[in-house]
Length: 277
Image (cartoon, rainbow, N blue to C red; front, side, top):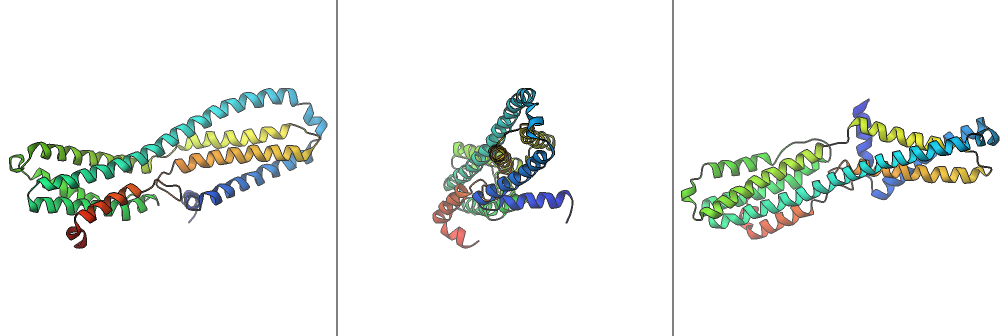
């Protein structure tokens, strides 16, 4: 495997590492590269020649720093909002599924059993298969069959035959909401920061770090330390954006606890149905 596919595979691999380890590795690698660049600059230019650029370099560095900070803050805000929405939509999906499950009590026994069985199958497919596949970037919609069965069931049902017409209409609305939240979950799993935005973020980070090379400090250890701290901070922020941009991948993925809790409630409420599947 080579090219973009291999790079994407390697990037996803680091997401599956424990949070502390992945952040440490990214920060350590970035620091090593930045300090190596500083070392070569200090070897090539004397402190006296670097000091000549202090006044102009400081003005440019401050202006660029503020501009880059705004861009990074916006990127964090957008990706954090997307991550939060993905988590919220998954919770709403589970809640809608439970509402439909409970609504089955007001339908005839055969219809109620079909609704409960398909709802259990649906959540099992989402929790045990779909979310795992979304974590690898492979969107295979295993839950679609159970949802289609429910839609066909309601489409073939005469509203007049429903014991409670109001509940029938409400259940249809909940089923429609379930389908909407399911689509939003799928879309959020494939929604990524555009390549051009990553190009701006990464280029800006490199330029920011390289700008520190143009300052000549008598004590080289202090300059190495400040460059390392700036590099570490920038690398962690950029990696944070990368993590938030993959809400269903790795150790920091959106929690599937709401689905598991709802599935457990359904299985306990309908043991005969869950044990037969």
